[in-house]
Structure formats: C-alpha cells, structure tokens
Length: 371
Image (cartoon, rainbow, N blue to C red):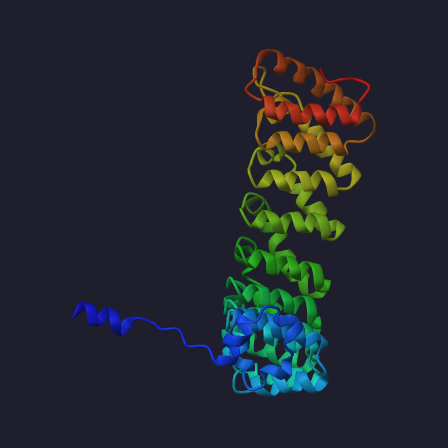
C-alpha cells in the first residue's frame, strides 16, 4: 500500500515536443533559429528556460508579422498561465514592451478580474508592473479600481507592494483615490517591511495635498518610535533627505535632548547621521552642541567619550566632524583629539572605532596628525 501511495502521488514532468528537443539540442540556436521556426509551439517554448530566453531575444528585432504570430498563439487562451510561469512571465513582459498599443490593450484586458491575484503572485506581480508602465491611462485606472478595495492587503504583501509602488510612480495622482485609505494606518505602514517602501514612494511622487494628511498623522505622534524601528527609521531618513523644510525641522526638533541615546541605537543612529547632514545650519549647530555638552554628572563621561566608545555612536560622531562648520568645527576637533589620545593610551578595547575617528580627523586637518 505504501509503495502504491508513493507511486500515486509522484509527479511526472510533461514530455517535450520534438521541436523543443531539437531546439535545446542545437548548438547555437540564437543564430540558426527564428521565431517563424517555432510556429505552433510558442506557448511550450515560453514555459521552457531556453525557449523563453530565445523568444525574449527575438521579439525586439522581430517583424510586426512575427510579433503578431507570437501574440496570437499566447493571447488570450494562454496568457494567465504564462503570466504566472517562472519563465513564461518574461515573454509576456516582452510583449508589453515591444507590442503595439492595440496588443498591449488586449493583453491588459485578459488580466482584468485577476489583478489582485496576479499582483500577489511571485511572477504575476512582475507582469502587472510592466503592464502599468506601458498601458494607457484608462487601463491603469481599471487596474487601480480592482486593487482599491484591497489596497492595504496589497501594500503589506511581499509581491503586491511592488505593484503599489509602481502605480504610485506611474499613474496620475488624481487617479489614486486609495491613498486616503492609508489615513489611520500610517504608523503601521511606516513600521512594516513592505509598507515603509510604499510610504516612501508616496512622499517621493505625490503632491502635498495627498501626502500632508499622512505626514500630519506621522510627524507629531510617532517620530521617536519610528527612529528606533527596524523599518520605520528608513521613512524618517527619507523625509530628512527629501521632505519639505518644515517636516525636516519637526524631526530634528524631536531629536533634541535625545541625541546621545538615539546615536547609540542600532537603527536610530542612522537617523542621527541623516539629521546632521540635512538639517539647516542652525539646527545642525544645536545638535553638535548637544554632542559637545559637559557630562551630566561630575563623575560621568562626556557625550563625546560615550559616543567614541559606542559601536553606533562613533559613526554619528564621525558625521558630526564631517558636517560641522566654522568655529564649531574647530572646537569639536580640539575636543575630540585629546580624548582620542587618552583612550589610545589606556585601552585597546575600542581600537576599531578610534581608527575610524582618527581617519576622519586626518581628513579634516592632515597637517596635524591625530597621534
């Protein structure tokens, strides 16, 4: 019985047709075969690794008649099958790239009603993205309408989030009514491995009228938590680099009084570096003053020493050395240098950190060696 059960459940690969066997056995198929040679076998070739590559290579240089012949064998009956195929999806993408507008329209029509499923499919999501890049605005809107009721599910899907990002990049903002569905979920999106990417694309591509409600929900309430979050820190960094001046200022203001703590945090330290780089001159100066502050207690170490010893804080200190200006730069260098010499003299525990700081000092004042 056990033997029969194994035999019943064993899967057998479909045998190749003689023409595909001949193609795979030929020495240099790219130079000896043409698309017309595989007429009647396009679908089988599309699902084969070598056959798919051959069609992909030939389609860009094929005549309109040859492309139409390939198209007619695939569309509509075999389109959905190949979209979800490990090799076939690349052929469908090439049809979107090199087909006529009429062919692209028909291809997109075959996908309608299945856009959500395909968007969340490992291979289908690639085809949906290519379709969004190449099809007409009205069909883009049709795809968006299918996804709209399920947009949060799609955003948080490992495949679907790439489709949503592509939509935000390529579809006119006035057709993206689903952005309003993000309100009330901004923290969840920002702290999600896929949602954080979508939120960044919103900030990058959408007008202020659509992003302002999202930022107004995020910035007053969640910045310190997101700075320390594995994924949220990327959103905060993105706003510091690409956001409006008032949004950057809001983030930097929430770093004040927390800089020493955040600089020693695995994720927040990256935000500290970005803040030092992109803050305006006055805000940057205030952050660096916080780094140069005296110890909080008479017997405590200074913030500079604490940061020099820390595996993350030392990078923030290096960034401060790199962006400080004028008299403050000179003061910071003169404060760091004796501490560096003292730590070198009495301890080897922080050698790696100190070497990096030494290099930064040498770049800033090469005529005065750090040691």
